[in-house]
Length: 254
Image (cartoon, rainbow, N blue to C red; front, side, top):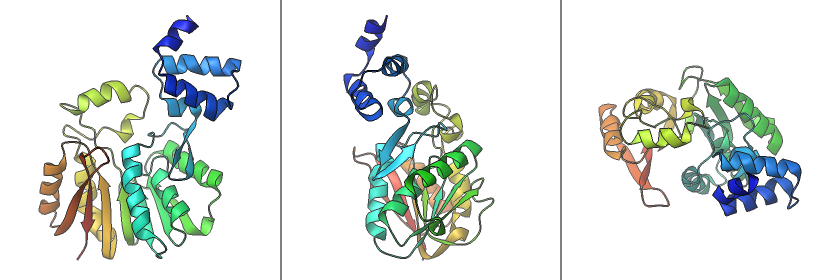
């Protein structure tokens, strides 16, 4: 049976598991983890962590697994921040990967990491301890979108739930939702319920000349533009991910 399971498995995932968790030693626990991989459990959950822009992101509380598409635009953010003294809000923080990447790569930034889910708040705190960041540079808040938050931020970095419950999103649900938290993915019939609520309030939390960096799903660009117009935003630009798909909007205040 074990040989059959190993045949079903991606060889690259097997090699990563052996290297990153077992340091190239095939222990009995390694073979038990092979069975988890063969059943479809994501590699990052089996290993227990993943790297994100130089930060080790523990995944023991089962938050949404950080994606390479997110890492792609966050790399652009940290490049723009550089050595500036800025206040950042990482909203819908999940594992904390976005906020931690800013703390790691932007030494003068201060970051608020916010999420509504208790398991995500535990995960964020674990990752802050794991990476030994200066506690004067960050705070962790429980917030239902902006409820529970106060103040204004130079940058709001948002990777909200945006998977549709019908249509194009249904394929994602069948594969990803077996293992990853549904609350981090589902967002109404068209996947935009959370984004609508977020954009309705976000301006009140932006400092003068502030920016929102908002990730969204494939095929949502046109509707995002309509929401921005309806909420009286006046300046924004869309950007593609590394695969050429429209996945990000950067919104600026006057």
